[in-house]
Image (cartoon, rainbow, N blue to C red; front, side, top):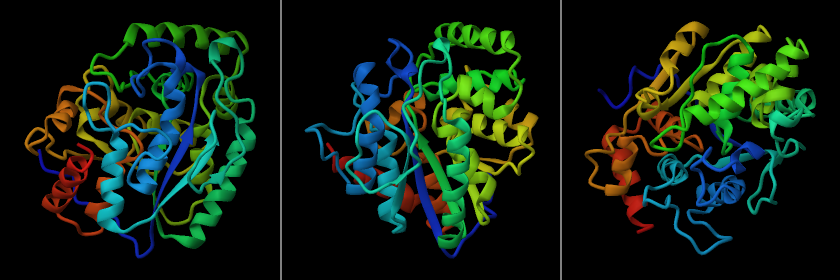
Amino acid sequence: MPFLSGAPLISGKKPAFCVILGNTLISVIPGISGAGPTPEKTLLTPNLDAELIMNGRITSLPIKPNTPTGCPTPASITRAMMELTGVPPLFINAGLKFPLTVPYIDALGGVGEDPRNGDAVPLAKELFLRGQEIGKFLSWSSDLLVLGECVPGGTTTALCVLRALGYPATVSSSFARNPVNQKEAICNQVLAGIVADNIKDPLEIVKRAGDPMIPVAAGIAHSYRGTLVLAGGTQMLAVCSVIKAMNGHVPVVATTSYVRDDHTANMQELAAMMDICIYYIDPGFDEIGHDGLARYCIGEVKEGSGAGGAMFMACAMGFSPDQIQKKIFDTIKGYS
């Protein structure tokens, strides 16, 4: 397939790139998330990704930005695109366990709780309103906003929210082998509580079943006046489902072809049901000459920290596929 699934009919004189960072305690359940060397350490991943994207290296720990199998993290791809485009990254703290070491906007949220045990995001409505205020600010400072996310465990909360809003969703995973049965068991338990309590309002559903990123992103989408691109896979479809349920304008989505090609997720079907325009980026990691990047092609990692959207932004700004691939390769080699 081509590098980009369609011509990027989007441009901006003042582009901005933001990543919403958050935690959900779903990620510490063994086997759910591959976004960290251990379940407990998944809670650190957003912080480390932010350091890498902002500084070009992880500064708080003496580690390289690779998975245990040697696959470069998507944050390293995002960093490469920040260097290529010259767009400075901005981070939004939706609710993190550990303090950030980079500058950020604070949405004053808390860590997402396990939705099997009660409300996952007690401040969902407040976070939506704070997202609106952030969206208003970003409207004055940019005319194109590419909005990514980093929430380990977030595909499971996305599954819960999508199903609760009536979509026959299946979602992706950072693992090459998606723990589908485990996610389904969690989702069924959460949905049983939602049905028992007759929860219908979209933000009440996020309150019970979601993670702190979702209401912040939905709030930004509600108030942002420029062109908004949600950078991510099935987690951003959960954001779209909330926006749509609130009768908002559903933005464009950009993600990698590795999410689209995940046979355990129905990305394209869900997009069609919601009438979402999705751009898929195929960066050709099987031909780029790096064994770690080639692992994306067998289903490892796939997407994260706005990597697909960052590559899309570079395309929209006029950079060629060759320039994008070379920058990614050179950046990744620098971490070897």
